[in-house]
Length: 283
Image (cartoon, rainbow, N blue to C red; front, side, top):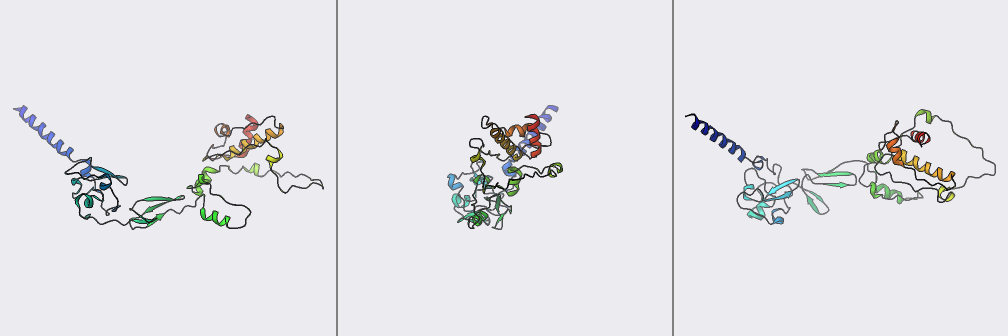
């Protein structure tokens, strides 16, 4: 008599497990419209031309950062219908209040939508207002216009590779030379006596003075390694000048970044005196 009881227990356990498995992730989801219908004017079921009868868990359309459904099962107490399901598939108004959107460039965006204004991220709040970050940007369009509108003897340009970066990011990634130690800062100045007939020129261009011996500047990218790039460039030019153009090497900033590790931080910054010490001692 024990065998039928064992079978009955197994059957009950299997039924309970089956009932537990019947509650899918979709049924346990909280729904999409606790705070109103986002993007109520958007085209989802209509764009996909889908309206499914009964329950069809594959009858979905991408919706913001998730999915929405266009089957009749979505129109239950906990709704996961697409915003246009009721109007397109049922021909009735949506039963939920429409969440306020944010206007921009003659378009209305749903709550949670974002866009970037240079280096600042703007987010559409539930109240229908854009809320933007207030970072100082590395490239400031208003500042460029103000400079170019004045008479300063030079013109500012919009370097697109810097657009979208904050001033803090520019300092962190596009510079990189640390202040020298006190022993270097306290070095004595060099004084040179000029003859009475010597006159300093109004301008000086090394490329004109030593044609073919001055190297083009390199782009360090988003690597705070100006200490290595400037040292390698100056050393390259000095070798070319002192060899009268017989040697015109392009010394490697990467060698300094990778190998000069004594009190240096690679693409996170370094010191010029340490770079020159490395070139002098290690070559």
